[in-house]
Length: 416
Image (cartoon, rainbow, N blue to C red; front, top):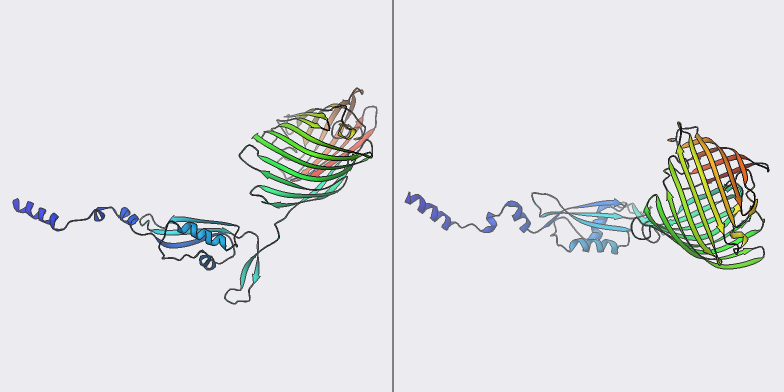
């Protein structure tokens, strides 16, 4: 027994093992120097992987240093060929963490393919110098100003993500030219910011005089929920009407509650808006409430009440207009103006197609009632047929105004 103990002691003393040899394999791997085992390239690009690796200045088999990620990203950005560059470090193997994979993600943006004349590299990517443009048609009609047509040209991502610089150009019933900045944010105090300047000309439906309006505007919105929004706005305006020129500032606030999933065909939903505006030394207020209840099958019952008021001191072109599809159908949209307009409507809406179809149509029966200032209450009733197809909406209503005549009201728009 003493011989066995002596042999064991002599073995331990004769062949000492270091702490490194006693460490598990994973620990030994971390202690080893890191090596680039692979380089992966991803993203929206037409540049070859070889060219991208050359610009990055990194090769497989070279040692990996902590500063290499930032250095590669800076080299790629310095090439000025990419709109976005991301460089990531990944491990090639769990068993051997010393093997590193460099992942390069780049976005060349809008490019075109050009021929080089080199047989080995016949094509190359050339970035477009012109900004990317988006186009939206302006096409609408109402019984106050008639048909308006034009285009909205937008440059997306002008000042960061979710931003647009918009140039509207319209002719017809409402002539317009301007520029507008629009940006949305999912978080923060202001979820939407709009600012711009524009020129607008239209003919007042009551006085048949041209209104020329030049304005600068700024608006911010906060969305507590998608169904609950508040907004504040300010601006400066120059108005030419009836041979007179007016200059005034505008300051306003509004609150909107909207539970409609489909505004074109609401069901079991409400819409309410309250707005106040101080303009031209006076005030404007607006209250608008709507409710929709589903009945038997696809039949929907809708009600609406609205009140628009303007201080007596305000110019006539800032006062509410009575008549037409906006409040009491069966009367001309240019019947009269006044200080306070009150109107209410009831309507039965019957879709004739499935609400899941892209192209939908239906019919409605309605009754309107309203007044302005101390004028007698006026009533209108009738029916309409309507069409919706994705971004297009058209409504044709035939209404009889009690004590007046029978009129056809046509309104529609293309919206996005």
